[in-house]
Image (cartoon, rainbow, N blue to C red; front, side, top):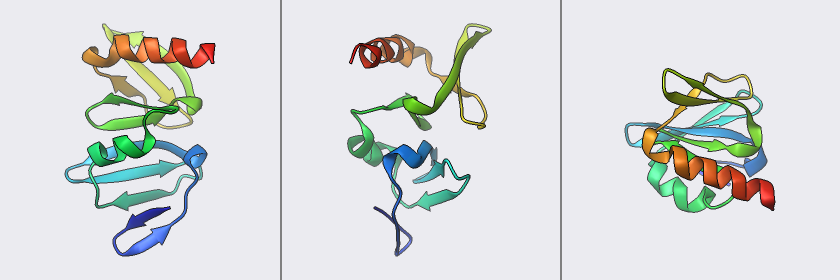
Length: 108
């Protein structure tokens, strides 16, 4: 359940594609194409979604790794493509952690 601007909406974790930080709020992008704007920072969502199949790839996004379609490298930067959404860059500081997270996910 997500509380946003005095309203409540239910969204299952598997329906969430990625979360995007916008100033002091978060936009939750759903598989359906709907978005939910929540007056809560991305940092506060980290405790709710991590650990699990969600990973914070940079300071602005947490992605659902189950929905990552491709990962590619371009000009020294690694990007993930998620279900019809734009490519999301992985920060240089998080690349090694991201790779290890994926390896551990594939082992389980």
